[in-house]
Amino acid sequence: MNRRRFVGFLILLAILAVFNAFSVWSIYLLYANGNFGLMVFMLIITFLVDLVALNPKGYPYKYMIPAMILLFILTLYPMYYTFRTAFTNYGTGHIFTRQQAVQKLLSDYFYIPDDPQEYNFSIFVRLKDFAPTDDFITLFQSLETGELFAAPRPSVVSRDTTGSISLATARIVEITGETFEMNAINYTIMRSPEGKILSIRSSAGDRFIYFYSPQDTSTRPNAPYYFSEIRGVWLRNAEFTDRTGNQIRLFPNSLFTTFATTERKYALKTITTFSSGRAVQENVVYNRQTGKILLEVDGSFFDEDDTGREIVVEGYISDVGLLNFSRMFRDPNVRGPFLQVFGWTFTWAALSVLFSFTIGLALAMTLNDRRLRGKKIYRTLLIIPWAVPAFISALVWRNGLFNETYGILNRFLVQGLFGMSEPIKWLNDAFWAKVSVLIVNTWLGFPYMMTVTLGALQSIPEEFYEASSIDGATRPQRFKKITFPLLMVTVAPLLVGSFAFNFNNFVGIYLITQGGPAIAGAATPAGATDILISYTFKLAFEGRGQDFGFASAISILIFIIVAGFSWINFRLSGSFEEVSR
Image (cartoon, rainbow, N blue to C red):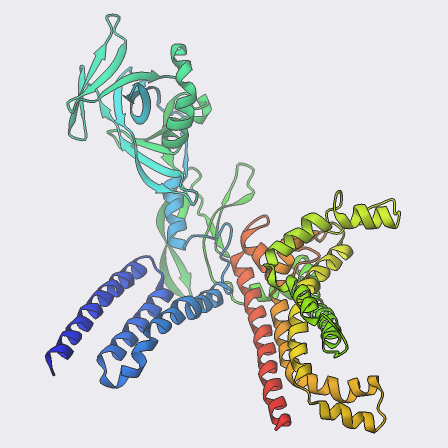
């Protein structure tokens, strides 16, 4: 091995070392977070990359490493994740794992005991450039004993999906005399001659001035800042712990003008059950206030309210088997809208291909006529709808032409030229909304069909037409016997591909009607012009709640249908090639 190759080998080892270090770190984090599917994919990618890089026989495959990594991460893993999600209840109310749901029950739920200990409180803030900050100290005074306690700004424990604090905690310390210690820092209370606490000074040089107290009317000018920046951010879900371990929160019974001791509402305990004659111990969640065990059914924890009615308190992701697939056809509230969307998807794709192909073929035959002058000008003008971005054309049609009030079609044609008293509800009536999306999709699709059919027409030998003219064939007969069969050799696979494209043409539907108008009585966010892909999008990201499991099940159905069309396309392509030979 010469020096140059040795240096290259060392560089390769260095790159592999960095890649493997990153992979090991990623695999560890994925394992810790319970994301075992992506962890397995990372293991496979790491193994294959190392195998290709270190094996002399794998040299030709080194150039495929980036594509292989992207294939696993951007294609194979999303397919696995979608397939996995389709068999779960993942969605609104079922976002967390069971372990996370139990942890939320244990930490986020509390109740006020019958005789809580209440505390008045005062807020002392640190100023910066004479403006208040959210760095503050809370002083508590027991209503029962008059004792004083202090607590720093609570530390964030967890946040919700919007980034807001869902739990913040801090420990309160008792104040004896005029000094106290928090977090290894000494604080001194500064009082007025009347004994009122004016500020708190720390040994670090910070000064916290008296800012707000619900019981002190003189601090009301500071209330807006307190409600928005201190209570609204920090104290709303703050939990303070006293020296005996009691939790102290804002007291709702006093309209949050005091703090009071609270109790954890739920806890874990071990019970013994019998299964198949064997004693089995299991951990269950129970209500500490009532002593009742929470019922766990279909990925949800159920508790009883004051009237004895069962209510859902937390949900978690659980396997539901084929439930999401059976809902499409068995649930009466889902079956009707789903079958309507399913049928319209096929109708939409078929009519889009039919209209765009028919118009495109007619224009292509016109442009292919030798007697036509100015072909380049016509061809340039007719290609414009294809050249303009589809989303721009869709928005122009929606806002400029189909608008019910000031759209060109209603103002100048329907009510102006034809004199109709009522405008056509292009986007708000189910029938006319379907007409609208078909018009726009035909407008966007006919230039493509015109281009491919024009190319196919020009590839047909003129000798065929000359021979048919000698035999006395008419123009319709020549089109039926020569033009159309030879045209389909080239165009038929493209028609199948166009059908598959329109089957998933999300933009063509969503930018015009957003899938609307809504189907009356539908239990899911289904609209009259929704196709399966837009319906899936609305299930996952719109509507009354997110239903990722059901949306994933429909995605699998779409994948199977489109894969079937692709198979037909390949079959058509192969069969036509054999005929042409």
